[in-house]
Structures are given as C-alpha cells and as structure tokens.
Image (tube, rainbow over all chains, first blue to last red; front, side, top):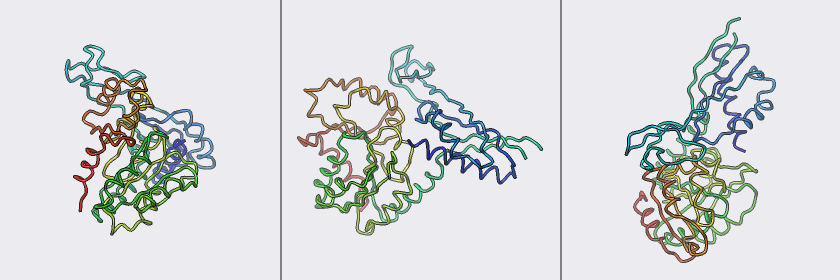
Length: 114
Length: 219
C-alpha cells in the first residue's frame, strides 16, 4: 500500500530535477532498489499511470535496477548472494555474516528531452 | 531537441527523512527519549505499551501517539486510562505512519512536561520499516504465535530496528517455535540488535526492558 506514496515521491523529485534542466519530456526514470527493501515493481508501475498523468513524466519508462543482497562471511571470508529467503554462508554454514548491499532505495537518474 | 541523463542519487523517501530530522530535533530540544513501536497486528503492541506505562508512570511522564488505520479510539482510551497522555492519529486506511503525521501528533502533546514519547505504529511488518519518524529507537515486537520464520520473510523490517521484543513467551510450551532458528535469522540480518524476550501476561522478562528505557531517559 505504501507504494502509492513511494510513487508520488518519485514523481515529485523527478519533476523538480526536470524543471531545473528545462526538460520538455522525461523519457525514463532509473531506480536502484535493493533486494532487502520491500518495494514491489508492478504496483509502482500501476500507480505511475495514474499519478504521472498530464505531467511531462507521463510517458516515462520506469527502470528498476534490482540490487542483490551481497554477503560477506566473516568466518570463511567468502562472498555470496542471498537467495529469496535469507540464509547462512553456503560455504561454511556460518551466520556470522555481514550485508554489503541490498538496502538501496534510490532515485538514481532521469532521462530527459530538452 | 537533445537527450540528456540527469543524475539524482537521492533516497526515494528523502522528503520523509528530512521531516523526520525535524521531529528528532524537536524531541531532542525537550530532552525526550522516544520509541517507534512496530509489529504485525496482534503481536501485543498496545499490551507492551500499557505495561510499560504502568511500570514507569510513578517516575516518568509519558506521551503516546497511537496510529490506527480507522477512527477507533480503543487504544488511545486505554492509554489515557493507564495514566499517559494520548494522541490518536487516523491514517485514513494508510498502512504506516509517516513523519508528517508524527509532526502533527507531537504538536498536540505537552512536550515540555514529557520524558518519554512512545509511538504505536500501524500493525504491519512491511510498510512502517521504510518510513523513518525521527525517534531515538525503532522497536519491533515479534511474538511466539507468529512463528519463528518471520525474520526470513520480512527482512526489511528485521533489518531496520534497534531493539527487538519477543513477546508472549508464556505461550512457548503450547506453540512450536524454534528460538534458535528465529535468533539465527535475526543475527543474519541485524547482528547486535538488542533482544528482550518477555510476557505481558506473566510479567517475565519485563524488568530488563524497563531498566533499558530508564537508562536512556534524558531527564
């Protein structure tokens, strides 16, 4: 449900930056979304069509760059990616691990015409 | 006409984060310690809050901001009867509290005469995790009957909290709950998070939680 406010925030920030650059049209919006953040792509796309209507972002393509949760095992020093369900180090079974990425929830860039 | 890429690199919810900073500043100004309590519906948020008020009210002045999706004042009424100031926020069906709602809530509390503000978030293990409110501490209440797999299913929530209460420990004999599996999931996502197993029914484990709050009170 919070995808609606997320979508509104993406639009607001995109419009601000587009205005600053005197854009006539925003063609793409690039988002970095980490595996551990909870946003769902489809519903943002769904809301986008309502929220962005009648703005210069109306026809923008939403690109979701999914960033995997990269893990570092502090016991055997190996690196691995988390599967759909978080789990321990596949090499040595340790839970003594550190999360290196996967929390991202970022508006990376917009592509504009001017 | 030319095409151009404009780099932004901003957190999507940065507007909320900025307002959260304002809330944090306001709470700091009045030396108030603050908790954002999150959990699934039925985990025992209100029960933990009421028992916390009961344990602290003789020495601590407490305000509670109650977030509910509908205009029901059940929780706020209980809190007021329990001896704390209460503000009810109706999110109008929204699944989480955000910083602007907390700003409005704080404006209705007598901040100059409070030591502790407790925010009861909307019962939900997904959305509240994404919205910083400006409190000192984010608390998640998990409970035995919910099952031991919740850290694995809601990594965003378990990852983003400072304190974890494991409530309803009195139900352990009746419910299959592998504490070890649960704790491993928590360690994986959030190593070092402070964990308080407790029961609102028997009172077991409540003392360390109350002592922990007392240590953090600023007045």
